Image (cartoon, rainbow, N blue to C red):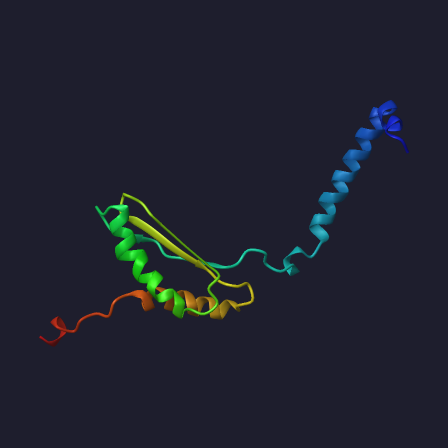
Length: 126
């Protein structure tokens, strides 16, 4: 069929395009999309507030200690950190898709705690 066939019959072309759209919508409901693998890697993000601090202070006090601990974390793909002048910072890390969800939760819980400095026990003895 040449394009001239559809130009000479605009009603047929319109009905055909509507049928194609309807078939596509119906097939979207039938396709097993849930069985497709994830495309984007999982991300763990921490939101931190440091009131009245500049972006530089937030980066030094929040992001830098986390960056120091990152080489010890397995399966790290990407690391990103943003700090703003209103005292908020949000470091985030991405891991591979192949990690199971329970392992992701375990890593997400341990990641911030590994980068925190140890608490002193000086005030606890009284």
